[in-house]
Image (cartoon, rainbow, N blue to C red; front, side, top):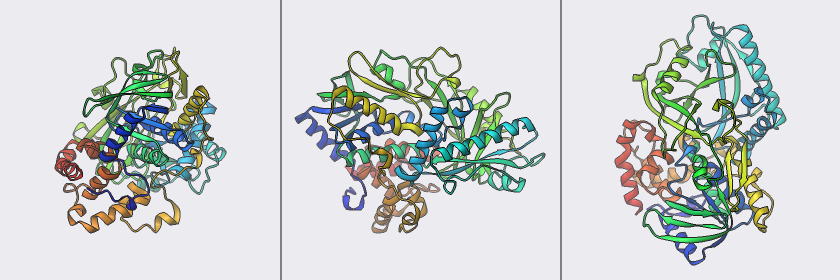
Length: 516
């Protein structure tokens, strides 16, 4: 087992630590704050609270980022969509939070991404003018949020040749060039969640996966270890429900209206070496687009839909045939050679935890978050979006501190780097392969050292897959991965393509066995 903490810039989350902390919690089951839910919002709450000096325990019934937080578009949006609909407040908030992630919290995991709207005959001059006006408004948002143009360049018109360099498979007939703007892109949403959890642990939070919270009230819960079945009762001065689309199961006093966002996964070759977010207007709509996004492991993600998703919430949502057809039909309006179902390598869908309103269209429901306090004192944070997780967490912790009169310092997360955070010249000086730096930031040299010391760990986990066995070993020892699914589906995203998942599964099982 790889457990040398001196090689890590953050604490080790692993099976041994989990066992010790469960035992310690059983011995002293009274805490300041209990956080339920190990997605981006819950881990954000745990970090914010722990950084203020609040004794915090986070529990997640599955794995970190098991739910919606691994099914996003991996974009850190600047709020342009909300500005277009007159929601200036959330638009500004999104732009501010994007800048915090890019510059301070996670410069190793969030990077600038150009987005390209190809100007083809289907986009008339009035539509072109509207899109250009929207991009200019985005420039104003960026400047108002304090993000320099050196980091996110100003929008501009690009030539036909520039458009084709960014998106080589776009139709050439009638192409007049393109409109380009810049936004933020996450290397991976699940990796952000893991970094938040480890940073929270570094500030004293207890982070427990495979622990379900039952009988939740504003004063505590019964915690059940799903691996052993053992239970313990925890008393808490405040409890925050950050379970996303499952929030109304924990707090029946609220009502959600989930919407489903679907993505398709393609080999990068299907898009000819895409280097920008290919942004395609949805026909017969105003201000709605789908995106083809360059992604890790030589892939492209195509998304996304916004469909009402009534009924029971599954642990793993799946796209519908109609959503797949919609994405293919829309992207094919701008491609020289149409994509078909046979080109699809995988797919994924996530559910957005939207508060129910009187509107009919989930695409029009506000993405503003809400912090609600139930009659039992249970605090629920719901709504919002991945980009604004930090502000959601801050508001939830502010409410908990006020509600329970907890002794706590001010919020620190606007300037708090996450585990692995590195940028600029320091990033350039890291002695590690580029791919490892993109995934692990300042911790990349430690993974590279593992590979250098052990030839077995220097091997790819399967032929043609750009993940080293050392990465599986690191995730088991440092990042809280407890089984092969954690390694394949969340610490890496190999599992998004079923053939790749099957090929890498033996290596994942071997890594878990070595860590026992």
